[in-house]
Length: 244
Picture 1 (cartoon, helix red, strand yellow):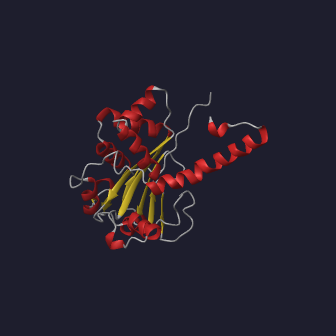
Picture 2 (cartoon, helix red, strand yellow; picture 1 turned 90 degrees about the vertical axis):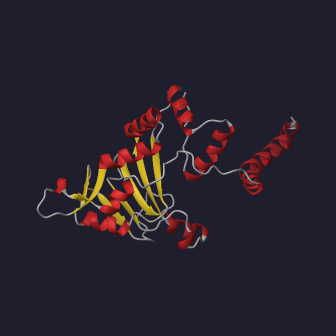
Picture 3 (cartoon, one colour; picture 1 turned 180 degrees about the horizontal axis):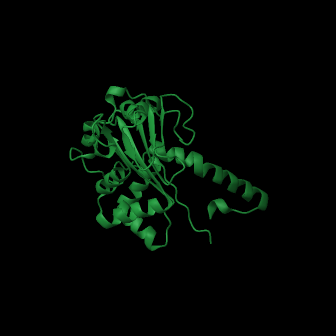
């Protein structure tokens, strides 16, 4: 048997949380059950929302250019708003200024982008009214994803897992001419981001309840075509599947 592939994007995760809450389960419970049943983690993303603008993406990109960036990979890419070369992103036309740290072909890399701009383009939300200004995404594949899940299930602390990964792979520093690069002082803004002045990162955030509008859209998209097909089968074969 080929088994089952479950792939959830952002909104899919929010909807799936509704099922978990109804079952009185958490993401931790689901991940544990998946591993117990022999599930393989192909990819997992952890997202950190910056509500206050701690991260200055152009400033971080400039520090990359000036080599004030210490990481396991020297690769980085910075895209301005509206550039069409973020070809791997499903929402590339919505994303604002975006900084990638690490190779996009590797099993671990980071994506930092302007979430407020995305909401402005998608929903028309004024930038000054956006709840989330920037988003820092940790993207893990294959073995890296598995070990991240194992860490989550060991400590039940998503914040610890996320920031431990970041600290392992990247840090931004300020140049000090009389010192070796590895001894340069940690950048203040970056220290604030990875330091103690932050809220805990939760795996369950905003499950979306079902609404009549969402239900009607689902019926039109998923149910109506099936009913139409069954009517044709009944008419052609003289059957009565519609009533069974």
